[in-house]
Length: 222
Image 1 (tube, rainbow, N blue to C red):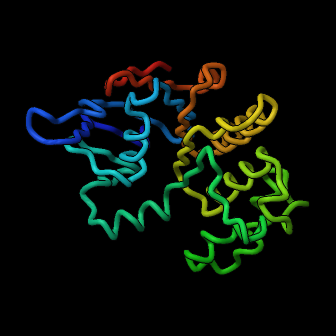
Image 2 (tube, helix red, strand yellow):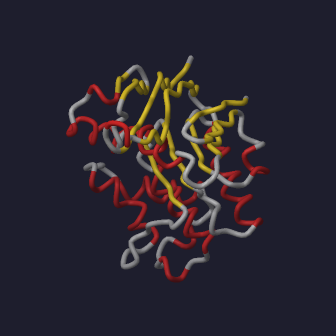
């Protein structure tokens, strides 16, 4: 069963004859637990597509359905609630809060959501990424690979059903890139749908679906 259904999505910037399509009439499906790599040259439309899929950037036309919910039929407030509850995000530059410890960074989305026991959930998430012993450290005391693992723990500690990863290995060496990829793949094996933007063809080749964007058009390969 498809978990994410994109139906003829388009996003245009500008008006009239000057309008430019960042993504153009694209359709694809992603199943629960799928690991999807999104590839394309700079400016091809990858980030625009990720913004649409992440309920942050409404398409000009078309429909995006996640878990039978038409995302852009929701009002802004309900869409924000949906994004917070069901979607997770990690980025190339980590976005950790520098004055919070590792465990405090992971606890942050739980506390914002009013979670009953954020400390225990954060400890479990850190154990799952192999950083339980670094929970009291600050981001400045971590390597790049460790920072990204903290970012992953923070993203999935709320148990989202889709995790979006925007160049998660872009700032890492090959060894740490492999570690990050294996963590993400293990999450997909547990039912989490992963959508990863990457320029690394070796990592993309190990996903179970590749969405290749060129000039706003999408070509899928399983």
